[in-house]
Image 1 (tube, rainbow, N blue to C red):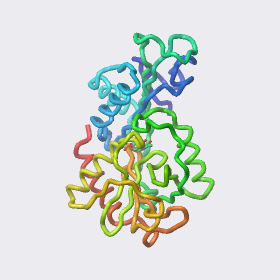
Image 2: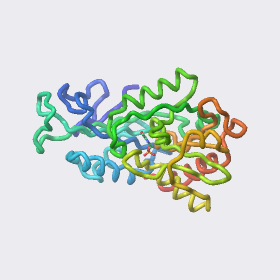
Image 3: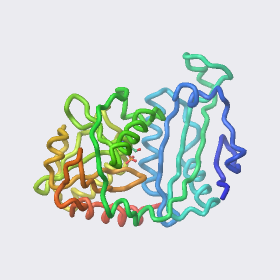
Length: 286
Ligand code: PLP
């Protein structure tokens, strides 16, 4: 089925949507993005994604393409036009183009490019991958130093995912100065003796919208949480582990660098957090 996508004010069939070859998103990865999940035809954590988008734009001195209300309207319209019950909405804002390639930013009145499209993913919530749990490998984190800004510089995370696939695993966790930063496209946690351990927020990791919601729900459920640096050795010695992201919610981890965690099936805390997160987000979905 041909999707209807959004590009700079227009809703078009995907084959007709066009962006300039001089767009700085294309030439310089000078663009930021958000991914919002859809359950029951409604948007999950929209407010959090809109606030983070605004922050990413401000950190890069990039103009905002439209208001939060307009963004919500575009998201909703795409979900409706494409009949999405479960899936994702991808949004990208780039610094646009003034018709040539130049390292110097174009003048501030150059309009940013705004592109959105949906991805239909039936079974996103009731996922077989989550029932099985993910196998993780660890690799060195060689990304740039502002991982708190959600830019489209995703070549290394993409290579990390390929390294994982090649090793017969599902994903990779990134290690810097001996400590786990995060997953290629998710935040990372382990659980030992009932305590959830995850890296604190800084410029070293993306401030996950799902992370914020899951930690709040875990605290409300009286679970113990420790935000501190941790090594991959600690995680391998854990009772269980998991990741969080808007596209996979809470994903249990059952193996790290070939070491099986617990009995090799998703742990009780990851499973419970996935349930609570899905239940609560469905209630608050817009
Ligand atoms: N960390 C990285 C590097 C990511 O790319 C993502 C999501 O794409 C996350 C964490 C999770 O963030 P969120 O929960 O907002 O999807």
